[in-house]
Length: 166
Image (cartoon, rainbow, N blue to C red; front, side, top):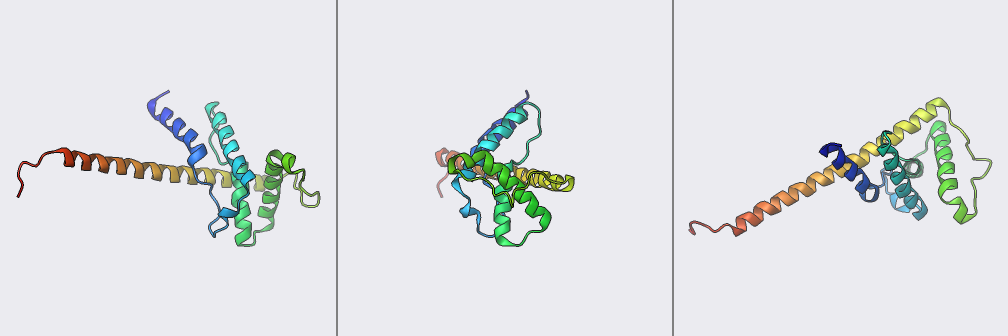
């Protein structure tokens, strides 16, 4: 394993806990239920394990659920995205919260499967969410490195005696 691959792996593991949850812009991100935030962290960990076995990293079902939840609160979504949202919400809810709450997805809105086009749309959304997470992480890392570099230069300058005081 080369150094760059190892650094990416470490960054991805740290990202499980420090990456932001990508939500649809508009101010509803703070209404995400706590159980969904926990599900996102757990599913990100699972994705990292899959990546160690050679699978490509992607956004998770829980992240897609959070994004579609906030999108649906901002604007109407078309029938395909409603089906995708109901499918993914049911899947995530049943997996992560139904046991605690005792509730299940109502039969009249339960979506058991998606069309091929809907699956493709969901996969594109999850890939986009992952790329957005990585982009935020890389920008944050660059800013931290720049800040450390500037602090080191300032410290060196402060410690270096002035040859001439004018």
